[in-house]
Length: 355
Image 1 (spheres, rainbow, N blue to C red):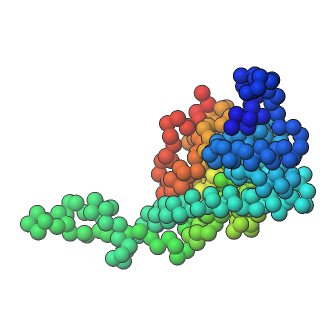
Image 2 (cartoon, rainbow, N blue to C red):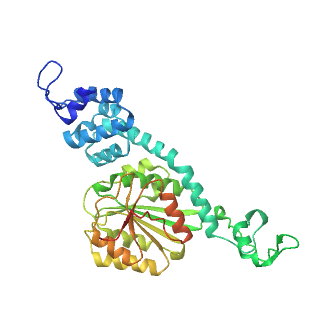
Image 3 (cartoon, rainbow, N blue to C red):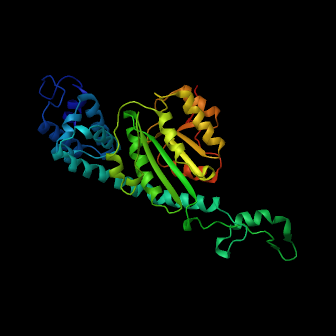
């Protein structure tokens, strides 16, 4: 354990057990790094291994070694490793690509297991509630709301309520009820968000009551909707890095909106706009005025609030489109609130008001 930590973080107390100076570093060869990866997986729990791997990539410049298949087979796969692999995608030799896809698929499948069931359950309920009808069949009656609106009809002598007005859930699964557009900034700082958004895009795309579109952008805009059934294909269709043109991306999304009152647009970006700022804000204002539910997420990841453009966040908040960081576990609740057109569940510490 001491040797593995010393190789990454430095010489520690300065002497080893034999009184010799310790020398930090893993060397430049794949075999020495592979041995180190094996050691840390032996001596440390998975959560610590992932942190040490990320530090090794950042501190020791090991990104290029991840282009070798034997290295990829040795690492502990996580969201951050996937982000690194995607950033190296264009430089990756053909002999490594299949191994890289296997690593990415493993992480994606684990995320789907963790997130899919709750997302579908939460959003199905939200879609049903957003499509309430006034003449429901018996098994579609929303009894809580029906009782609430009929309390004035309570008959004490019979200890019952006469339900003059029935309120029911709609049968959202039988037709498309809502349009969802995920608009994802694929600049390098958004790597984890791109991974999670791709997984959620696939989950939303599998729901018949939602018509889901997934758009990624840097200075260019790419529509990956046709690949939604496989988030791994979506991820390898992204190009992490480069500049950012939010205005151009929103212009494309706006052109695809046909039912504004039934549309939710989710912009996932740190808001460092390289395009035309005033035009970007005008587009957001126009979409909201037309009835679109607009959600701005500074990040979709397990980390805290990332670096972001405070001025742009404040400008969006002034348009009633507050920007905030969101964890993957909270995302289904955010989408449910947007679908039902109720206040978003923004944590007190997550809202970005530009201050």
